[in-house]
Amino acid sequence: MKTKISDRSLGLNFNSSGTAEVLLWAPFAKQVELLVGGKAVANLEQGEQGYWKIITGDLKPGDQYKFRLDGVKQFPDPTSLSQPEGVHGPSEAVDLAGFTWEDQDWKNIPLKEYILYELHTGTFTQEGTFEGIESKLSYLKDLGVNAIELMPLAQFPGNRNWGYDGVQPFSVQNSYGGARELQKLIDACHAKGIAVIVDVVYNHLGPEGNYLGDFGPYFTDKYHTPWGNAINFDDSGCDGVRRYFIENALMWFRDFHVDALRLDAVHAIKDFSPVHIVQELKMRVNELMEKTGRRHYLIAELDLNDNRFINPLDQHGYGMDAQWLDEFHHALRVTAGGEPTGYYSDFNGISHLAKSYKDAYVYDGQFSPHRNKTFGVKADHNPGEQFVVFSQNHDHIGNRMLGERSSQLMGFEMQKVMAAAVICSPFLPMLFMGEEWSETNPFLYFVSHTDPQLAEAVRKGRKAEFAAFQSSAEAPDPMAEDTFGRSKLQWELLNMEPHQTMFNYYRQLIALRKNHPVLKDLNRKQLSVQHNEEKKVLILRRWNDEQQVMCMMNFSESAQAVIVPAESSTWIKLFDSSSPEWKGHRFSPDEISSNEKLNLPPVSFLMYQMLRKAQTEEEWQMLGHS
Image (cartoon, rainbow, N blue to C red):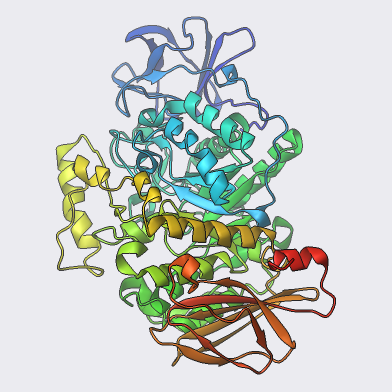
């Protein structure tokens, strides 16, 4: 049965006359009853390939309902849009069409212009809700980001979770505000010119409240993932499973007006079908875009260094529009002084950072000691807009036992250099909430399972899993409400120093990135990179037509001498992280000449633009001249 593009078809939907139409995939069942308010009101009619259906006037928006299988067990709807009493409680009937959108004039931002900002709804504000996010949209607009990435929203157990224990992929977490508040938030984002990305998890479901296996063959023991049996995308009975997840993705785009999806850990999706599930997903999204005229993107988290996932469909690729580039992050953090343990052990620092600037993948056919195998392929023909880079994100903070951010691990000057390294890259830059003001609270791992045995298993597993990173410290209790509370952002820091200076630093860097013709052009062919391992200096040069910028990064604690390139008589300074404006202690020259020796301040970032003979008035103004 082919996925329907134009309308939501699985689960409960209300037609134009307000009558409920239900389509449930439950091939394991021999009888299915609809329960409304705890009472059986009707039997569903069995159809082909395990689908059950009913059209009834006994179910209205706002009603609570469940399905009873074979006269015994009661379960919430696998495609429920709302779980007001949590993952074990009844589903709530929701009419998504009841929301009035005001974003008819919204056009998704071109992917190459995205400035991403990852946030966790529960800890971004004290309220921990979509309404809380909405109250900060003017702040985000002022910062300069134009795309927010929401960590997973699917219903999870309790009120506290990163989101990767979700078990109801169609249901928007009730403690965040539910489906209607999410629609309202996205509408408000579009009014502000901000795109919305939702993180979705199609490689596993959480352990508590996961009832899909009672309805049909959603899982297979043919493959295993770090979270247990894999989702069944290619084994017996997989057609209904594939439809379920494709329908879910289409729902986010069509019914919530989401602009992009970030697909969690695509490398953990096991599928050897002739058409991979993410490839089929891309095909269906293309059909949706043709019908609606709206543009949507698919961004993969991928740990395979395999550009088949991001190559276009017509080049036998899977068609993902972009991917997270973890290797850039790993190389940057080791360069900045991070410990080379765990998966960081594969990275030697500045030479690997230089390689990532040039080649995207650090490992593109070399032997990887950490993996103990030759790893990766070259990505020479994939444009810069296909790679999302960052100096920190939820994973690499939370994968530390104590959840320390860069602000706790790196000095103020190094944080500034790392920010510039990301924002001035030929890739899509992403910030993690709060880094722009050097937030000092950690981002810890937290859950709120209601099963005591599961909660205790998580506590023990947490410490064991990350022993390679920090074995001497005591892991915070993931179940404790205080662990969650300590992870919330401290917005009051924005009015204090040095946090206010850091915010202004990020804001100016982002503005430069968005407005400078060289920096906003992500042509990876128009760059060169040099590095000196002994001095810990990297020089990135990027150009566009006749314009060129030179980004100098000194990761060492000492001043380092470099020779200015000879292609131009004069270079004009655009940005200086060591300026007193940014709480630095010295000014570097406003102009430098070819072959001149320049002393880079310790732990610093400098950007210069080549002065051409014919400089337009607009370019002079951009350089700060009158």
